[in-house]
Image (cartoon, rainbow, N blue to C red):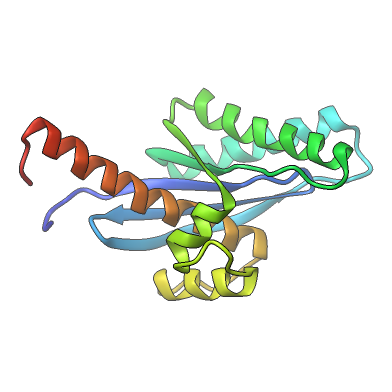
Length: 175
């Protein structure tokens, strides 16, 4: 796949208090770490202010790094309905912010992310973070949330590449 233009992917790990983000470039099977970080909100602020801060943070990341696509981790329900609802709102902001910027957005279940990165859908956070570091040479884990966001981006890179190959095969395009 020599000469293939890289696709820049934004991965988002939703959280109301800590929203992880990670940017990778994917060219064929080659993945490169570009940037990562975490958007933090103050739990003492009202919900609307925190959601706005998340949107503004994601918009700033998109403005600075100019991704081509975005991927957001889906959230599963949790024991506390209030926490689940707030996490869903943060996830909604992640989806909205990427879509508002004109990015195509895909969503992945946590088990799909783990399977793409580690090889098993039941991997723990330490295994995921270790594999992110192995798959993206030069990445130095800044926060667990940022590493999780990079894992979402890696998952998307693998799925999107497969989807492109299938589309090309269906259309009879050879690369």
